[in-house]
Image 1 (cartoon, one colour):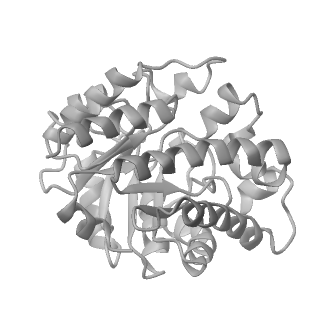
Image 2: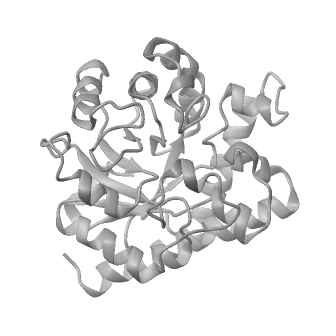
Length: 313
């Protein structure tokens, strides 16, 4: 599979999948504690739900003939995240991550979209993704995330992807862990209207620090778990990187802050066409990797794809 940069040379956009965990909870009625979607790989009902969710996203890629980044359900499949859900056997790190990758790779092959779908091995924060106070420092994070990064790389994912991190220090640590595998990788922190991470670090400073300290640096950066309107505002901030390193967004369907969305017992979401219009405006400004996060569905990604099939760049 060519690199993200190479794919963008021949395509107007790279789509990304939409929500996984919020769909499991609200659409399929499956409790997903700690957003540990990996647990559903091991029950009949859960696996059927994951199949429906991921199959729908991959079918959008196949029908639109647009490339798509699809992430493994492994955001919480790191050592402590596994133990929190009762997966404490010595080989569970490899077993669970391998099952997640094989699940998607088999689906990709069955749907005949191997030329379009890039499987991203997903790594999530060690603890609360919205609370930087509990995040490890860079050295601790590098050591902590290294085993999962290595397992995913060895399995054969196309790239590594670390979304929804609140702390610049942990983001640097996971970047170094992913860089050591030799695979392409991307980072996707959460930001506010002033282009700051949740811990207050200016986005441009975080990007510059990671680009300098991680070898090789990330192939690109996205913004994760943030509504398009907040990214539009952040682009006007002095803290928005001016070097073109931020190339994409996995957008929430609601402008509420992630910490507030996390407390709701129901979904808040823009309709698919409104969602797609917001991302299309960002694409016109240079964003090239676009998909969904909390509150989005296949309908949102399908509406986004139509924008680029009907009006190719």
